[in-house]
Image (tube, rainbow, N blue to C red):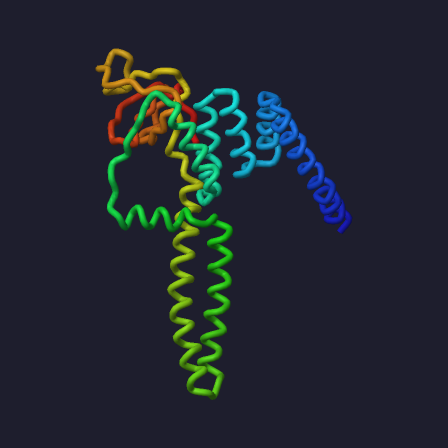
Length: 248
């Protein structure tokens, strides 16, 4: 019992300290001490784990320091946690406009784009909250149908339950989609100023094309120690040295 009390006391003392650490980092940013602020945010992430707001602020620091690859990396990490944040999306687009490679992603079927936009319109926490609320209301509708004597109220209850069943399924699918995206580590950002993409994992293989710092790639094969097979958003693919990119 004493051990549990000690743990609770430690947690209660830790939370104000963490908030203070975040406030100190924010103050450094406001004072335009971007390098120091970036270090403070990095330490915050190392000690407390991932947080969309901290990644966003860290991306802003690196953008101010003109370190575009780091800015893009941290904006992307923020969006993995909260893809609904419009400020992060806007800043990411601004940072990507400063890269050398201007990539036009291939067109998608309209329903694929619609589904992605729907899933990214809210955070995973919000989707989960809506799903739980819809499930509770659905149960109330079923109970109304089962136990009320008034025929009109029973009909309202069962029809409402059917609609809410659809809502429960939809919101859970959106939350699951975001959860899988958050746990995915198949994308990376190029950090080397220029990388020659090879036809195979060998320096002597054929040069295919060159990509530059800040470009986003999908990692197709990471089984080799020194090389990664990657694919650009526009569809081109090849092999690059593993140390030229950072996984999102």
